[in-house]
Image 1: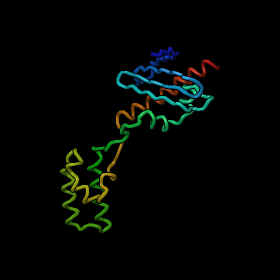
Image 2: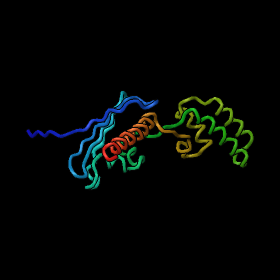
Image 3: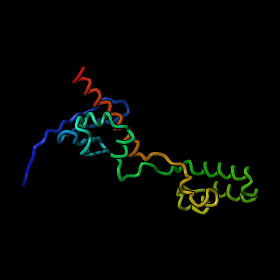
Length: 174
C-alpha cells in the first residue's frame, strides 16, 4: 500500500446575497494538473484536469476557463436542459394559429387542435399525438426548453467561485 499526503487549500465563502455559504477545495498535483471541489448545502461538484497548461494552477486555470466550458465539465453526464412544461401549451396554441394563417391547416382542423391544446395536461408524453399533429415528426425538439434547477445552481457556483478566486488572487498580489 502506498500513501501520499497532499496539500489542499480550502476556501470558505459566505456573505453573498441570495447564495448559501459554500466551500472551495483546491488541490494542485503538479504543473498543469489539479482538482477543484465546490460544496454547499445541497450541491457537490468536483473535477480533475490533467492538462491545464504547465503555467496554471487549478485556481488560475479555473479563472481563465470560460463559464460554458466549466459548466460542461462540471455537469458532464447530467441533463442541463428540460422541457418548460408551463410554456408548452402557449407555444402549441401559437403554432396552431400560425399554421392556420399560413393556410397549412383548415379552419375546422385548427379548431380541433386548438380545443385539444386547451385541454393539455402537464405530461408531454400524454400529448404526443397532438404535438405530432402541430409540430411534425420531430415535435419534441420544438418544445420550449430551460436550464434545469441543478444547471442554474452550477452556473451560480461557477460565478461565485470565480469571484472568490479572483478576490483571493488580488489579495495575494495587490
